[in-house]
Image (tube, rainbow, N blue to C red; front, top):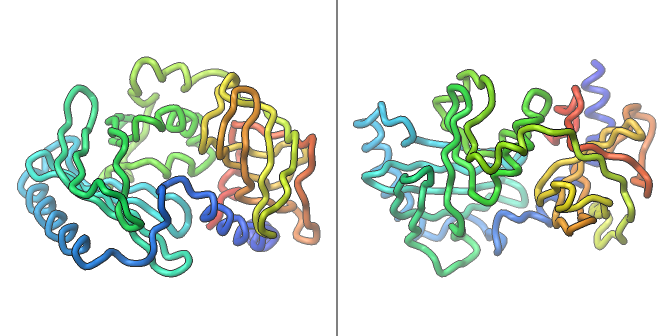
Length: 293
């Protein structure tokens, strides 16, 4: 009953935040504009079928397989790959109508890096851009692929994994979903320091003028010198409200951010973010309430 009341309390803010999340999405340089074009759809289906056949004939390959990440309650990314056939990556959402982007090509796993060589590299709203390599990370019995520029984000998500769904935003092998995550993931040595240390504490230093009524953009007084990276999450702790913030851009000593979820713990109250509010990078025990869905 308490959770139902809480969800009702933040429902409107959550729905508006989804629009803001869509507006600020950094997943694509161009916003996908509907289903895949016929030519790309046919090529992706052909490659996907070949990968499935290769996986069925090679079930013991440790890293080959289907991986999925969830970018929100209505969006997700699927990566399928096999070293003899290549890869398919496909992003989709049902927000604002069904929209997709995809790409495919060759794939090679070597020296702790999965290098993807896409067939479609000229851009376009329905072409998923491949600009980084993927890094294989083993966490207990679970296999992940993490984009090379998001390893710090992954480490922060691991620190919050017992309390929040942040880690769901990273590509996990489908057959591993019910397997155990024990100990710490084997991220590259230079990133291990991000698995330890104290949480980052931040203060709202500015409330930006809203370009749209559903957008709440603000500035935090922490930046890269404090360990902040884009797409990092922060949670309000003073005052004690349901407020989830994501970093859009991190400067050296300040960061631009937007509000994903904002709501009072009592459904009779509405709240507006204020300068001076305190946030932390450490997820609270009830962090699942902060996430839409």
